[in-house]
Image (tube, rainbow, N blue to C red; front, side, top):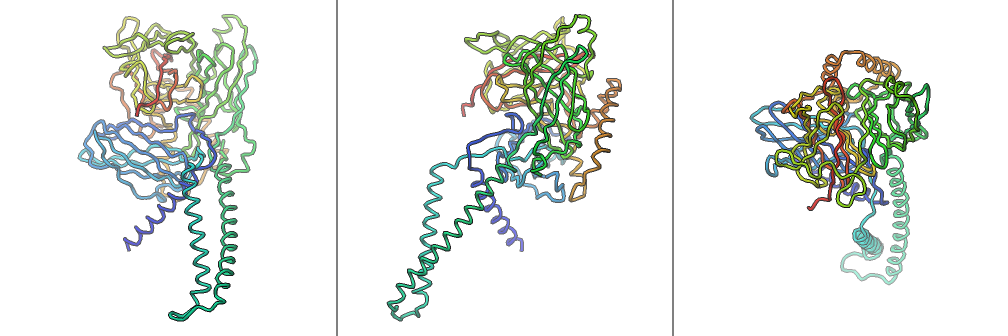
Length: 565
């Protein structure tokens, strides 16, 4: 019985492999759900195990995700992994696949993701130091269409033609030689029957192939129009009112009712770090003005926030949101910020919408050799004998990029970006939690094509992790959403209450809401972020920490080249 089941599972996997192989080819188009950074990186402590996890989801679904686990601390005997979808929960999940030990405490596996949707990878770590579980949020979405290679196309066409010829020949033989008893001569009229049978068989095969072609074209269109990920659209505008500039963000729901798979449930947004939306604004082309804002929700579709004293110009807008099912996405738009002429007293008296909003105006982004703008901040800096960078912060302290591997980094390589803060006398100064974390960072490629919001625990959303972890603990096979109005109102009440809490109580509440968050910094003046730059290019990194009740932002530029491998 077990052997039969394994054979069936093997046949199913081969069918899915063939289906996904064919489906993955089509028009040449690449899109991204995470603005250029599709992989998920997690760095956390699980019991006695210190883990660095990288998950590269497939760009076509069904497809395989590449899972890599680096065991930085702890004795591990085995690591298992399995996908768990929010839709079906733990009850509908498959059994674990065991990761293979490659070298240097690095475990790897290719894990099948069978359908689109919000999902997670459950890792089970077992060894002498105990058994632990880690949940990694993963967005299982199709993001690509590709052209089939010419060689593959010709090969499949040749095999198809051979099959048609063989099938027609078999039909002809079965209609002539197949009706003659062994040892008896074939009548002359069988030759005509053979030709008639072959002709009729060819017509039937042609009709079958035509029907198959129609079905396949329809399936490809469905994949492109329904399964292929399309980010939710937003419309952002800035208007001047009462001597202040107000940024308004509206979800564009045009056509959302036509496609169930692309429909978002706007009333079911979750707060991440206590905020329903994290909006990052960066002025182009120099990337010199930066803001990290937290718009207020006016209704299910509309958010707004008062802009700080930013210079006028064209800005890229990246808005991070998380839905109840753990699906996290970045919504993008461009917005023109008009100039505003007010007195210095009025500017100083202006209040931000959220006390945790922060912004910075710095020098325009430079490039390396032959630059026409300012040079990189890290051209000539050495920290503890290693290449580094240093920047003076607004309160007189300094932020240092520690242990930078080199002046030029490598695309696709996993780095731990370490930043330390020293006071005006050069001594290490303690940092305070900012939105419940040791720090935050935003990384942007010079053309805006790559954007990521980083945390010390990795590139994923804490709210998504909490939602997926709670879903796994739920024993129900199907999740039932609560009443949308009550859910939205309860979330708004929670977010508004957080704003009124003293800083210590707020950070305590935020830490309690972050499921499984365990990432103590080695030193209290340092913050670090795991990240792999996805593409070559010039990047700007904004690092945000909190000191003496004030949010401070450091800015660093770096160059990334293509991998040599």
